[in-house]
Length: 216
Image (cartoon, rainbow, N blue to C red; front, side):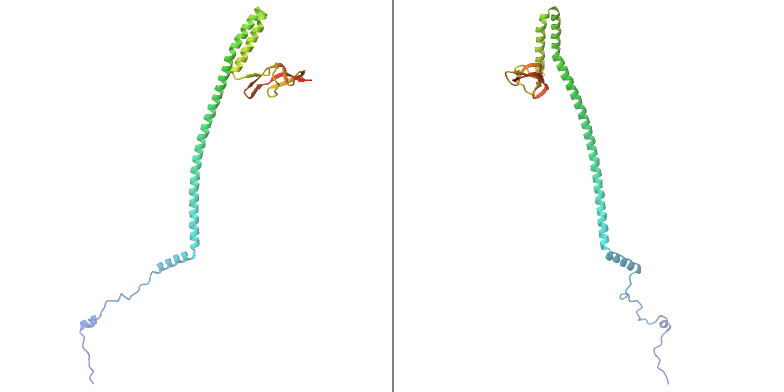
């Protein structure tokens, strides 16, 4: 029996295969898996975000609170420095004011003493003349002393002093001091003056020491 043979292939066809065969690989339907490391990192991040959301918000709040406190501390430190500077200036100004006040008071006292002494100098001159005249004629001494006394009262009036506690005045315990009470025709009447008193407005400088009458 004879077998029917198919078409005979030449040597080039045997070596390269069929000429019409498509040797280009199909890449459109090939799927590439993601890298194992990338997938692992994504899973870890998802797990951390899904498992600890409250902790992340809490930590963020704590950080914000600490930043606010630090800012507040910085503001307070700056405010404290400003207050210290102002306090130092105030203390310096007060010290200068106190020094000037002391100087003004001392100057006023000095002027007051000088003014009072200047006003009393004529009284000294009158006393000196009265003593000189009294040495030659004692009868002239009393009028001279009375003139000096009147001038002293005039000087006191110029300084703002007013005499109180003269004979015939009504006794007033605010200005007078009764050292003795004697029978008389009226109550609380000054009959004798041991020491004249002086007042300056509503302020008592020296009380008058007097003898007061009382109906018996």
